[in-house]
Image (tube, rainbow, N blue to C red; front, side):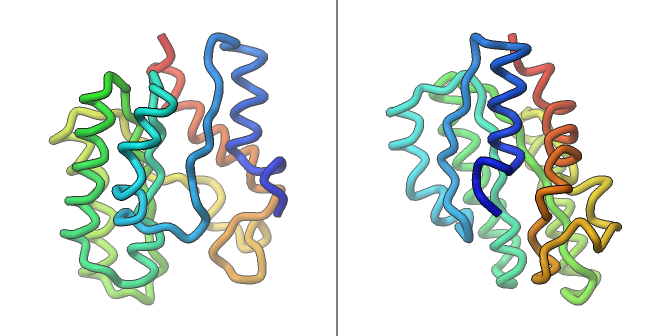
Length: 166
């Protein structure tokens, strides 16, 4: 799916209409883990000096079966750096498919709420709420949402983001 059709581009359009004092810098890299995000966050914060950081990382850690503790530590450090730079943080949670086992999947899902509480950040518990249960809204890989899903994903993000826009 072209980047211009994704929820991040839709967010930029909505901000232009409703909050033109904000803009979007998409610093994401497809397929990145929290370790990759941690390695780059310092430069991103220094370069762009964001007022708000939407932290949507961890899904690739989970899909690769990486240790939840390491993911939490990486996300916590990213949150700390963003807050230290003066940014408000929206942590975006994710869930895993059931084939990862109940223990791992529950620990993974709970990590986001635990981090949001301990680091006092805003939380979107599940990015794909209203999307995940509809297989027609996924590309053939059954992991990535289609263009048709993007407005719902944006709605989810916007609901959690709006209170952070001052």
